[in-house]
Figure 1 (spheres, rainbow, N blue to C red):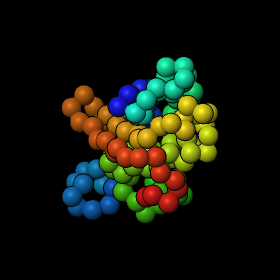
Figure 2 (cartoon, helix red, strand yellow):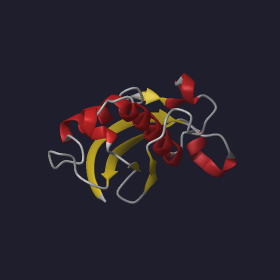
Figure 3 (tube, one colour):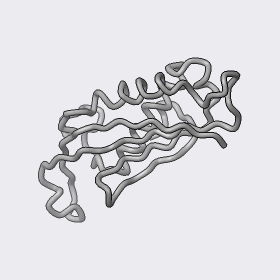
Amino acid sequence: MYSLTVRDHIMIAHSFKGAVFGPAQKLHGATFVCDLEMRRRSLDADGLVVDIGMAAALLAEVLKPLNYRNLDEVEELSGVNTTTEFLCGEIHRRLSARILDGALGEGGQGLESLKVTLHESHLAWATFEGPLQGDSAR
C-alpha cells in the first residue's frame, strides 16, 4: 500500500460534559497538529498517490470551519463531546465526502483509505483510520 501524508493545524476551544473529564469540563483551548494520510494500492499514471498540493489545500479547506472556533458553539457539533478521538472521525468524514465529490480530481478516485491523526502534544494523539465514506458515517 502506498501512502502520502500532509499536515496542517487548528486552534480550537471546547468543553466536555461528564465527570470523567475533570477540569476539562470547563472551557479550555487546544492546538492540534493534523496529519492526513491517504492510501492506495497502486500509483496513478503520474506515479503519485495524489497531488500533494491539492491534498494540502483540501485539508486546509476542511479544517478552516473548525479553526479559531469554540466548538461548543458549532451547530453541527451541538451536544457532542468534541474529544480528540471524535474530532479525528469527524474530520475523516468531512474529508471523505469531499474526496468522493471529486475534490482531489481523478487521482483522489483511486484512494482506498484515509488516516486522520490529531496530535494534542508531543505526548498524546488520537487517530481515526478507515475507508472513504460519505456523510452518513458518524
